[in-house]
Structure formats: structure tokens, C-alpha cells
Length: 386
Ligand code: ADP
Ligand code: MG
Image 1 (cartoon, rainbow, N blue to C red):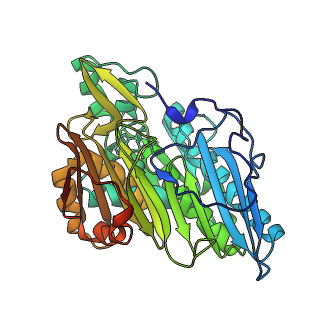
Image 2: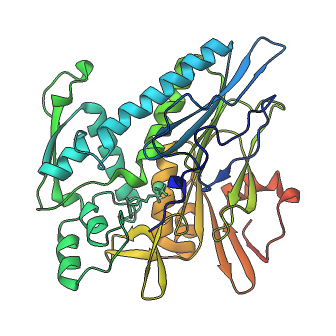
């Protein structure tokens, strides 16, 4: 298993300092390389005074196992700095509830001990996740921790025996969890507010497909509440934007990487708001009997989805974009396109490498985001609906 974002680059200052804020289009799905364990705020990289007294500031922190890069504009450099610091804190707070990579979080304790106290914010997030499971007919399903373990998706990857696969499937699904809201005081934010318990032995919840999105939602809300008027956030390849970009009012240019060649932009999008997330099998994968499988599991079969390309989803809510990228990756380019086409507020782009080049398919909403920059996109072999 490989994880590109964890390959150490030359520290948090791997990026050069810019004299002025140059907005290079971030590549969706292309991870920002960073040093493991690098601390926040070491990556102050760009700032520019504005004639109107506003200032842009860019900082990077290592959170949720990857780099969170934030560029924000506020009335002054100080306001921007405080807002970004608060945004990092909000993500850190979420990681301390959702991470199942450690034992001292709500989901970590659930994994280790089969039950855990959970605060109202955690329970609300889980309720939200459950809603996306329902809406995607179970294609998005974070209750499959047991399957993540059976396939060793956090390690080198391995094919489980059919008995192990069957028991992991039996320990996956929302029916394996019981949530008790409790009668604590929500205003107090006490972690003792409610409880979440596993009903099936070995069942746990993996926030891998919605944690970064939920964190981006928190970070954007925090930035705005602290006075940031515009911003661009890149969290390990998932992008969120608000307000308007530095030099020209209008849309934010974002490029979507080629599914096989992550450094090569395949399509450019113009975002006016919201978030884009990409799911593919190229960042982290396992090779099983000559087929490349990603780290995304098909909850219907209990098996990792075979690599077919990538899907990029835009939605106003970053958590929805994150969860839906995973769900549409499970559905695949045909069913996924139909699903997105039928949903207002969900734009989807499918990139599928084939013998004749890259096949690009998208729904009408995504097409509108691409049109504005179409002349600058490379000419692919086939366009479907874009
Ligand atoms: P990334 O971590 O690259 O952003 P995704 O957002 O696609 O990737 O999330 C994939 C992760 O979510 C997997 O590593 C696993 O932890 C978990 N997962 C795998 N399959 C599913 C699924 N069908 N629904 C929800 N979570 C999943
Ligand atoms: Mg996801």
C-alpha cells in the first residue's frame, strides 16, 4: 500500500516563498507533499498587502495524516493569521473526535473497546454520515471498519479468507451500531453527552471517507466567523473555496489530475464556491492477483473496488463532496453519472483511461463549471456530456 501524501518532502517549507501571492491552481486529488509530523504554522508561505488594506496569508499544517493548506484574505494580516490558526484548531478538535487511528477519540475508543461516550457534535456528524449512506443506497458506508481490517487497507493489503471476509461483512453496516443521544447538556459540549456502541463484535466506524470533508466544513465556517472574507483550502487534495480569488474577481481555477498520472492536470474547473473531492485508486492501493484495487470498498460485495479511473464531485458542503466522491467511485462511471445527473447540487466528473485515451464524462452541473475554462483544457479523446 502506498500513500503519496506521506512520502516526506523537504519539510514543511518544501514550497518556495512567493514574493506575492501566486495562485497556482491546486490539483484536486493530487496530494500536497509534506513532512510527516510537521507542525503547523511553519509553512507561512505567501502574503501580500492590498491597496484596500486587506491581506492574504497562506499557512500549512499537518492534520488528519495529511497537509491542510489554507490561503485566506482578511482586513489585516493579523486577522488572517488568527482566523487561520482558529481554523487549524477546529480541524484538530474534529480529529480528536473522529480519528480511529488512535484510542483517545470517540471513534478510536469505539474501535478499541466496542463503545464510547460521544459529544453532540460527534453524534450529529454520524447522523449526517448515515444520511449520506441512505441517499447513496449504501455505496457510502463508513461502518465497514471490520472490512478495512480484513483487507488490511491500512497496511500492505491482503486478501482475506472467505471465512474472514464473511465475518467482516457480518460486522459491517449501520445495524451494527447503537447510538444513544443521552440527556447531557449540549451547550456544555461535554463528551459524556451520549454513547455509541457496537452491536456486532469487531465492528468499528472509519471516518476516512468523510472526516476531511467534515473538517473542511468546520475550517471554512471558522475562517468566516473570524473575519476572513475569501479563502482557498487544500486538504490532501480536497479543495474548498469561499469569496473571490486574489487577483481577479470571479472563479477559482482548480485542476483535476489525470487518474494515472497524478502530476498531470487532465481537466480544469472554475469554482465559484463549495468544495471538490476526488476518489480514485491511484493514491493508495493494493494489488491483488494482478488487479489494482483502491482503498475504497464496495459495501455490497465487501471487496475493494477495482481501479477504473477517478471521480471528482463538487457540492456546496465539503462533507457531502467527500462522501459522494467515495460513493460514486463505488457506483462506477455509468451508475454514478446517472445518480449525479438526477441530483441537484451534486456535480460529477468521471475520468476513465482507456486504450484510446482518457474518457471524460460529466453531468450538466459539472459541464457548466468546465465550460468557462474549456479552451484551456487539454484535448481528451472522448467527451461524454461535458
Ligand atoms: P481519501 O482518503 O483518499 O480522501 P476517500 O475519501 O475516498 O479517500 O475515502 C476512502 C477511505 O474511506 C478508505 O481509506 C476507508 O478508510 C474508507 N472507506 C472505504 N470504502 C468506503 C465506503 N464505501 N464508504 C465509506 N468509507 C469507505
Ligand atoms: Mg471521500
